[in-house]
Amino acid sequence: MENSNSGKPNIVIVGHIVIDHNKTEKASYVRWGSPAMFMRQYFRSNFAINPTIIASYGDDFLQFASDTILLPKQPNLEKSIVFENIYTQGPRIQYCHNEKNILPEITQDVIDSVSKADLLFLATLTTAYTKEYVDDLMQHANPNCLKVLSPQGYFRTIAEDGLVSTREFEEAAEIVPNFDLMIISDEDYPEADRVAHEWKHFSPKTNIIVTENARGADIILENGVQHVPTNPVTPEDAVDPTGLGDVFTAATSLKLLQSRNLEEAVKAGHVAAREKLLSPIVR
Image 1 (cartoon, rainbow, N blue to C red):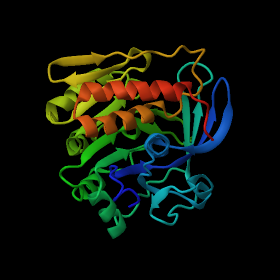
Image 2: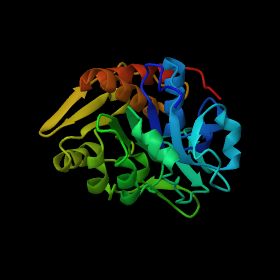
Image 3: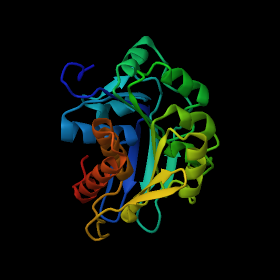
Image 4: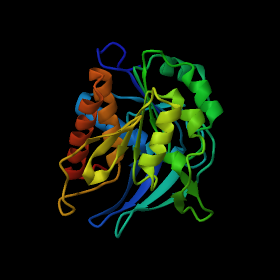
């Protein structure tokens, strides 16, 4: 891998990569999307780390790939998944198109990549990543690797017209215990703190963080929460919220890998998210 001899951590992101059609109050544009790609942008821009991304994609994604390290090395879909993100009024409205539960094959290249990871993410946009797949994949991770779950896809159901709506994370009891850290948003599920405490009960070794937008974030404890406030950005100053939670997850996870201090990690996530929200759109 590119970072193996650099003294920097090896980072591997498993999940989805998609083409985004985004519409905000200030802009409308098409570009790459997905937690994996927003995390990659953060790591590349701030630390000169180029993560390996393990995900399914089509030929149409190659125009956005540039020097992205992808596994499989060749497209395995006819068309890439497309997300429409509409932020014009009220909560975000999403549509998902071309979604098929075709997961990247766990080849020797994938096994080698996962086994060398210092920081390993599972960042989903749909429910495609099954317990069986996750179990098979995670068995190859180094015991010292920090394993992070960004589970937003498990909270989503997709209608025939592509409209994305909320579902229960029914697979949580089987999937969450594979990970050292899980980060969710209170926008992913309306009772995020409540279900996070349920997950903490059956997976006490997993650190769980619930982000609350301008209010900051909660670290979920077995008998309560530790709130970590943030310095909020006013709506007038916000440029583009797409990928904001992914940047928070990337920054928090890397800081936790380096410091092993969860509160300091969350504070680092807040700083990175604020900078992202105030930054110009990168196409």
